Image 1 (cartoon, one colour):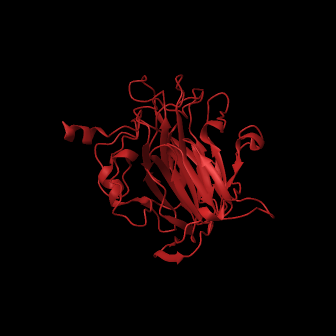
Image 2 (cartoon, helix red, strand yellow):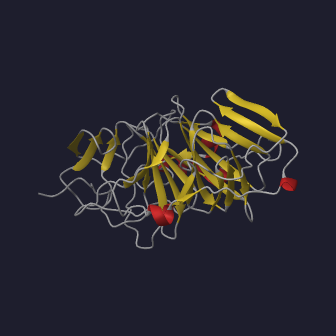
Length: 358
């Protein structure tokens, strides 16, 4: 019997039906498949807040010197506290931040960033995920030029939790932790601004000392860590491929992060994800992922929207990652202004918007 789990795109050849897969809990719960006589991800137009969209990070209207607190710009939020933000930074942050509501996962898309934290210092490069748990204070400084970060905030703790028990992440080699670097007192600032970040807005403290200065770490595990996307191994299920592999999850199961880098697999199935919004950040080529070839492209498909997506089997290779959030996301005005309607077949701009641009 022909396997229809990975239904062909239009033009791939006539078949009796196109398989459409409906799943609960991503691909981990109840599932159902029907055959349709048409290609379900194709649609003529869409209007409203639950329509799939995408945008480029460098097209966002970012605040600059007129923003005294230099906070990242929210691009999506949910009613349950999950928030996505973007940050473009070209100089040392003038503030120290402590998020009292959520863990923060910073993905360095471009450039290099030094993270000074309560627990020590981490130097992060492009492709690094840096996890800063709730109520750990930090300050960021770009190194050698402007840096872009994409930030995930989770009310529930985020942990490295690779789907395979071994082989997916080499913890001894590729996971790095913040380290204390004692400083001379004559380099200490005379006044520091500390911002406590909460759901109802920031609270600003003026301090006579730098709260991040430390002498040594003397007890317990260092909670601030980093891992690079390129060091997370991809996997596949023989003989047909199957879903990607997760490597970071929240304790409550509301957030899951997967590597979506190039791998040998068939094209994903036509899919209705009943429980999770899907956000994909295309980080780097050289290969294109379907119609996506611009690094820094963020794609969002809300739960319940039928989609298929491009093939991940790209010989030239590319780097991307997938965020699934059980809380429903809504793009902020900044992201909406920079976004375009998403074609849920190859993840480019939808034909209806391309027609309007002509």
